[in-house]
Amino acid sequence: MQKTKMTLGLTIVATLGLGLAQPSGASTATTATAGRAHAVAAPADARIAASCTGRLIHRWPLRHANTTIGELVLYWNAANKTNCARMNHLGPTRGVRLRTAVWLAACRERRGSTCTPVAGSPKAEDGVYASYAGPVTVHAAGRCVHAAGDIYYQGAKRHVDSSPWLAHCA
Image 1 (cartoon, one colour):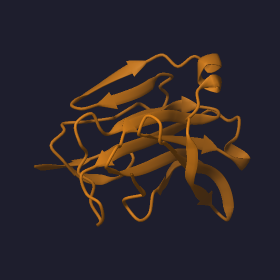
Image 2 (tube, helix red, strand yellow):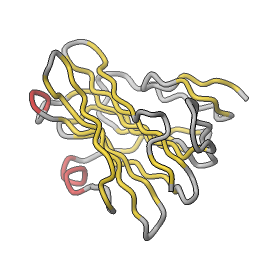
Image 3 (cartoon, helix red, strand yellow):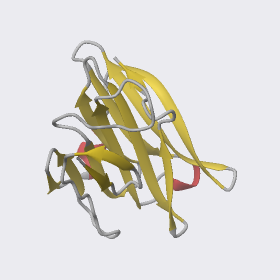
């Protein structure tokens, strides 16, 4: 087992060799799967239509200087046993092209302060967006999940994640 530092500032216990570095001026999305990462084009029209399906189960606000600048949202789709996450811009970041990232992992653990991702997990997207990063989806039947998101705002990374670590257990 090795500890892997993820782009979103999380340290997880994993056997995955996953690096999600993305230049701050990049205009592509990065989708990560077990042991590999690849860039995909993210046309604005297709991104606007993209959404998580299922039931909204949690929102974590991202605040900076007493202002809500974004929110991490987590959905559960009972029909296909998947969780979905998206990092939304709100308030002063809405409509502003900023580096934004979202990360979601199905975990082996059912409680505690670590997340050991299962095969095919974590999934992440990191790029420059005006509305949101994501959605990213993981199959999570019988698993707990951990989600995290970042918005680079006013010269620094602003971070939010599911707390406690394991946000939803199906």
